[in-house]
Length: 160
Image (cartoon, rainbow, N blue to C red; front, side, top):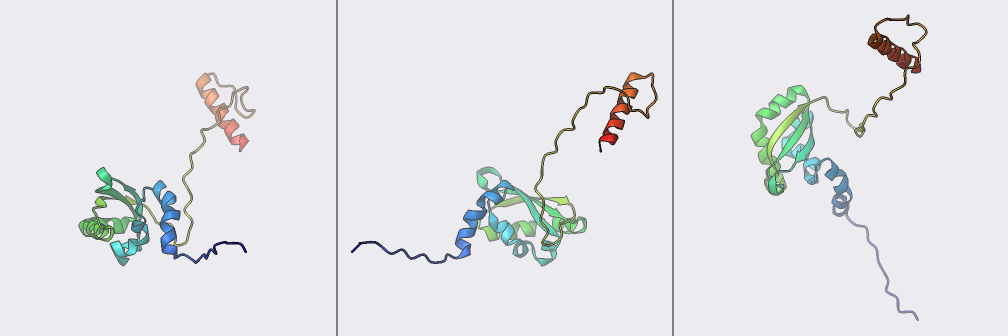
């Protein structure tokens, strides 16, 4: 007989796994505290949460007293700024320590519910092309810089 131990694997509660899985994704946006995203409605109230989202958390010294940037629609941003002391107090009370010291607001429309927000990508620099000859529709222009600019414009339009 073999003396092997039986291993029993039981299902784990999702709440114990979720912080480990999402730490890297939230950390990229400055959200080491997942509670801020998960409990946003309870922290700011239903009225404010419907028209706002936390955008980025910038930490202060010793990871305390940071600045929270909130993306809000223009009308609600003014109301939230008025309620800022109450919102900061509720966020800090929920987190258990002084997580947020200041709020800043970015006025922008929110994405529709359930919409996937695309990741920001860097734009590639425009390709430079050597100007060999003017485009056929451009007549000879005596002013060289103007002629070169019109040629580049024509080549760009023709390449599309």
